[in-house]
Image (cartoon, rainbow, N blue to C red; front, side, top):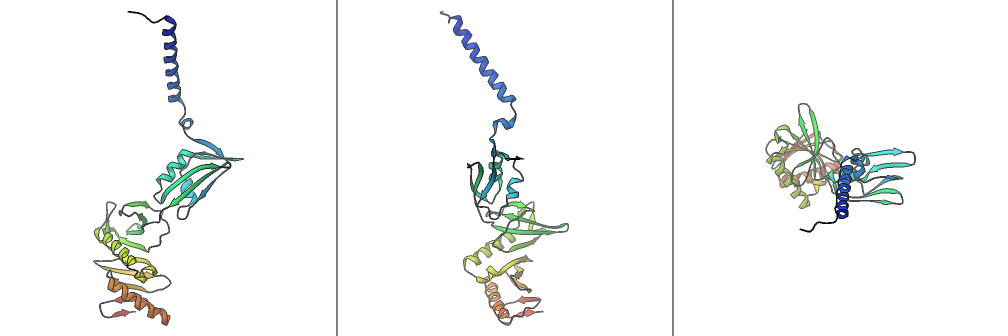
Amino acid sequence: MRQRPLHIKALSAIMITGCLLLLIALCAAPLYALRDVRKFRGIEFRGLVNVSRFEVLSKVALRAEKDGVVVDVDSLKKRLGDIHLVKSFHVAEENGLLVAVIVERDPFFVLTLRRAGGSVPFEIDEDFRVVSAGTVHACARPLLIIDEEDMKGGVLSLKVRNFIRFFLEMQKNRVDITREMVQIYLGEEDRIRVYLNGRRTLFHLRSLERDFVNLGRIVAALDAGRSYPETLHLYDDFCISK
């Protein structure tokens, strides 16, 4: 069997040793050496509406210096990817600035859970999953207030989910009074209590389209007379105010 010349064997051994040394050096290097860490004149966000600058940067690795800021760009990208309201984003350097262009998604629904130890606000997505708790964002829909029995193990009850579906259907059907609702208290069975924008009255009604339409007519009459009772209860053919 023909053997390779000694100088070829030596060269192969040197190459293998070099690769091993490089691998050891990479493994022993600090983690930040493998990340995209750069210095910028500053950080600029474009497109933030509901999400705040602080909410983003609170979990980003960065260090301020006299003439700029050192940023772990990878941690910024991860943070943006973790925020549910961020639909998409693009991060790039422009004239020495770190620029993050962000497209947000609107909050689906904001709720408050009432319990003995206090109230906890939280947000849900289109699949009724909790996406944030304690910190919530402005929402075009009314705040929905529920009790402990309406949420078990982080899962909303069927009653709550059905009401949200009903409310969305009322919005889709252009029932105008839905635009005036700012707080809805979910009661027993189909009963709800509602506060409207700019009115002191607490309205008691059912989660039925007929009641929503009648509420719109009653509110129009109250607005015309500029007189609002403390409470108003709606029934099939009449209402009672106090």
